[in-house]
Image 1: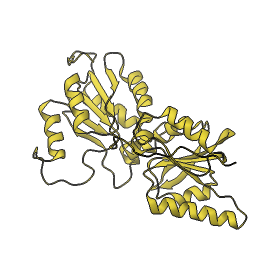
Image 2: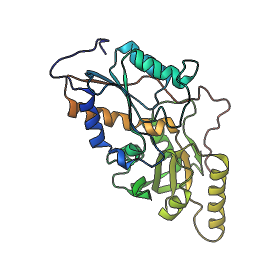
Image 3: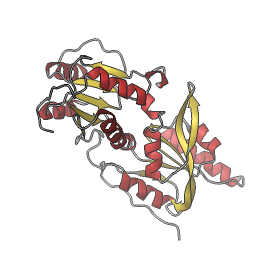
Image 4: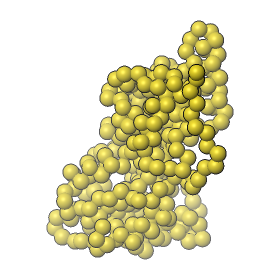
Amino acid sequence: MDGQRREGHDVPRLRDVVAVLESFYPPDTAQSWDRVGLVAGDPDQPVASILLAVDPTLEVIAEAVESGVDLIITHHPLLLRGIHSVATTTAKGAAITDLMVNDIALYCAHTNADVADPGVGQALAEACGLAHTDPLELSEGQELGRVGDLAAPVTLAALAERLHAALPPTAVGVRVSGPADAEVRRVALLGGAGDSSFDAVRASGADVYVTADLRHHPALEAREEAVAAARAGGADTPYLIDAGHYATEWLWLPGLQRRLGEALGADVTIALSQVRTDPWDFVVGAQAPATST
């Protein structure tokens, strides 16, 4: 970015950009508990430069300040839960202050981007190699998650490696539960945290579930149920791929960059944040996949 805000008749106002975003991701398609939309900014301010990120962290905002950005668009909301102070002694207060002092607007598209077409789910499906998908489940009348079949079966390790190559790099990488050489074809997926959807995954008949933030007990219980099903003559599926919350949702950003560029024109610069907002920095003692003999 050139670090300078540009003004002129061809530069849209913030209200124009919000209108485009809400045509992509209608606010009324967000889940009832969510907080989406314009968080900071004057609807009449010009927008010549936009920064896209997964999270509105202090480091992302600092990147925007340094680059002279007019608007940050993030997936995760800054103010999902109520706060009682905006003092700079708190992270939320410091973030809000940095946005206001530097005249930077913030817009968030969260679960309304998850359920959109195209949206977070389609981006993750494409990274898995799925062409056609159906909704994994319905939540508050909205299609949540996707499920579909690969063109041809692959091993569980090959699918994990395909995802790893498509995802932004993180310290944790991709976690897998299941035999590396197991054959998989039907894939269920949900970007971000997905361990509340195991019933829908089982009902979908998926061989593997791609999501993130899998906690110990739900993941272990899901695999135990699969083992019990196999003992009764069924399949020991679904296998699990935890590809990371930040990484699975980052995949949506390049598509948003292209769509916004087409809608807003060449007078608006749109960049992807270079800040990795995944919270983990390094891993010790990771184990390589083992194949059966």
